[in-house]
Image (cartoon, rainbow, N blue to C red; front, side, top):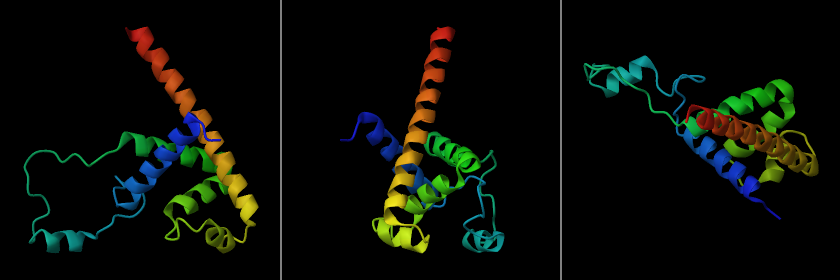
Amino acid sequence: MRTFSDEYVESRLEEWAEWFSRGNYSGLGYPSKTLEQRLKEGGGILVEMTGPWVPPSNRKAEEIEDLVKELAKQYPSLALVIRKKYFASSYKNLSKIAKEMAMPVSTFHEHIKMAKMWLSGRLSNYRSANENFINNVA
């Protein structure tokens, strides 16, 4: 039986995968286009505005990215499984992903569950901390 927490974590992970798979890296990893490609597409002009450029952001997706990085420091295999599940081209075929990782499917599913539980705990800690901060400020 799925709980609210399970559904919440799943929706946050899907939002995270959607955001970062569209190339909205905001400085994470490699840029999606080279400098030359951006010049070519911009007609030789890199910056078309005079004001500061604010990169697109998604605080919720970036929060999950930070948590997955933290998870990777503590439990590298759990973080890898989460990344593989949500970023693999064969997103729906978990047995294929498990096979590519040379991991039994049951272990793969257990790793996903454990990673989601870890994320659920960390997200609830963040929520509690934010609520305490808001209550103390008010």
